[in-house]
Amino acid sequence: MFGYRVPAPDEAMLISGGRFGSSAPFRVVTGHGAFIMPVFRKVRFLTLAMCEAEVAEKCVTKQGITLNVRAVIAFKVGNDNESIVSAAQRFLSDQNQMSILTGRIFAGHLRSIIGSMTVEDIIRERQKLATEVLDGSKEEMAKIGLAVDALQIQSIDDGSLGYIQALSAPFNAAVQQQAQIAQAQANQAAAEAEQESQRKQAEFVRQTAIVQAHYKAEVDRAQAEAAQAGPLAQAQAQREVLQMKTELAQRAAELRQQELVAEVVKPAEAEAERIRILTEADAAKMKIQAEAAASHNRVALDKMLIDQLPEIVKQAAQGLKGANLTVLNGTDGLGQMATGLVGQGLAIFESLRSGLDGHRSSEQAAELDDPKALQAP
Image (cartoon, rainbow, N blue to C red):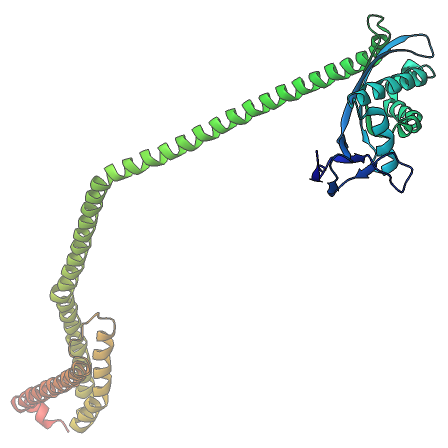
């Protein structure tokens, strides 16, 4: 074994066979290589990797109860040269002895510390137990060049004594009770949730049925209306035709009534009014004749006739006042009617005058025939 040698990252290279400045019996090389002189130098390697030791020990507590304790220790050779030299001098020839010796050291400290504690303290404060074991073994481990990284208490039991189980019985019963209560509450909540879900489903089904029935009713109504639309439209058309025929009949009756009024009633009323006017004129004529005969004065008679002419026309117009006459030519028709009234008045005047003249001639003839009348002054 000669030449340039380089240790692995988790190894320490130990070179022996020469004199070194320090008190160490060999040279320690880590992290880099070194040249090895053949024949005069010898090289060995010490692991710096993590190692593991298991402990399974029966320990007696302060109460005299035997406990089976299992623990795991994680350790390694220290990184400083002093620790490497100490570990190499003890374990270089058989490096597996590091785990065996470490387990024995920790087993002794476990027995010592557990002997000062009760079962209750050990169970409740495992971390305290591990810390005290580490603190108690740290100095011894440093002397042999080892450093402990971790100690883990894996299990603690009392075998078949049942002490630990008895300690846990009240807590177990309480936990079981709480578990049963929680389970019952969970079952109740689940049942309530299931019932609520069923109620909601039933309500949803009911609402769906109501909506479907409503939609079906609307569809049926629309179909019925569509089926009746034709007959209804036909009946409506017939009703409108009958209504129009009725209106036409009413209009025809009104028109016929107006025609009858214009053709029969109005002429009859006009004829009756004409007869009445002529009758009144005759009466006035006789009155005037009587008055003229009494006065035997033609001038007075003519003057009287002239004075009575407006009254005659007025009476003729008054007679037409209540008559329901239809004027067809508007303003011209009214003018023609007024002209007719005046003409009738003049005709009456001429008739009276002619009558008076005839009456006077008769009287004169009678006087000529009667000598007594001629002798009268």
